[in-house]
Amino acid sequence: MSTVSKKQVVKDIILQLHKGLSVMEAKQRFENECGAITSSEIAEIEQSLINDGLSPDEIKKFCNVHALLFQSALEKTLAKETSPSHPVHLFKLENREIEKLLKTLKDAVSRRTTTDLLAFKRGVKDVLVTLRGVETHYERKEQVLFPFLEKQGFMGPSKVMWGKDNEVRDLLKAAISGIDAITGDADFKSFEEKTLNVLIEEVEGMVFKEENILFPTCLEKLPASDWVEVLKASDEVGYAYIEKPKETEVLIRELNEALVEEPVIQDNAVAFPSGSVSLSELMCLLNTLPVDLTFVDREDRVKYFTEGKARIFTRPRAVIGRAVQNCHPPQSLDVVQKIVTAFKDGTKDFFEFWINFRGRLVHIRYFAVRDRERRYLGTLEMSQDITDIKKLEGERRLLSERD
Image 1 (tube, one colour):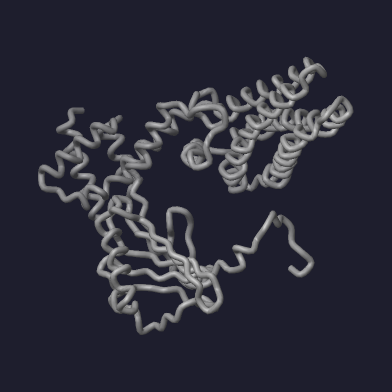
Image 2 (image 1 turned 180 degrees about the horizontal axis):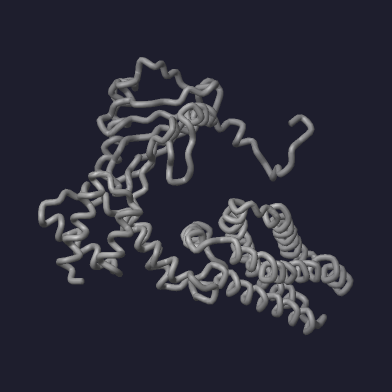
């Protein structure tokens, strides 16, 4: 079909969407009448429609349709595990690199001599530090893959395998710190037996468990649409030792650019792209935050503030709708105006201050709130009492008795 014909179909679909046609029906009609389409063709069609007088807002109604087309293209790409873009294939590529690092560790130990202990320690430590990339591999598995298994009612990996991953993390940390303490043969033998060999065994065991238990289970239980979501979410965590195939990168970028994600009100709840909360939950959630939030809209009017139990600054409800310039004393008006102006003209996105207030150290931050096209929506002020935070030292990973 010619671009002109496709344009007519697209234009009619957009008009039908405006009249209530569902996204899935629009997608089905497009695939039946137009067939395959490239991102450049979509851009060309959209520009042509704009030239014909169709508003960009109307064209946006089609964005989720061609996002679904890109999703379909991704699903076809991920149809087989052997596809170079399939998440399981990428996990296995990382495992091959992990195995190479383990072999390097074993070879270094087998060739060790007492003549140059410092060089040996340095070499082993370098490999161990590189092996910490396995933590990204594990995190992607835990934070991206496990949730989709759980949605299928399969909870085992997140309950058992995650714990084993943490054991590897602890062993890696102990190995990296322990290598520096070696001063002779006796120290090394103890380190090898109690830490290094155990680490190697556990990492090898995890590779086996993933490839013989976890991945086959995932391939059996997850549909192609889930693998698309796994691939998209994997970008947020990253990859260990490998690069994602370029063709997949392009498809995901096009999909994300095409997808219009807007919050909507459904059944007395706000549905965000990242989840939904009821209106009452949202209010309580915001008021529970250990910070004071105030939002000033693009017209410089105070539009909203949180009402937590321990507000730092007085903020009566009477300020709603008031110009932000009138909410500050005259001596700080110049600073307020500079912040707002810098946010509006796009030269800055963030300012911060810290003051002593009634014997407490208060951190005050200002953020420019922008939409997807970086248009200015307003200013978010966040105030936080950081007096006790500044006193924190070391780590605390467990509950204490007083908790």
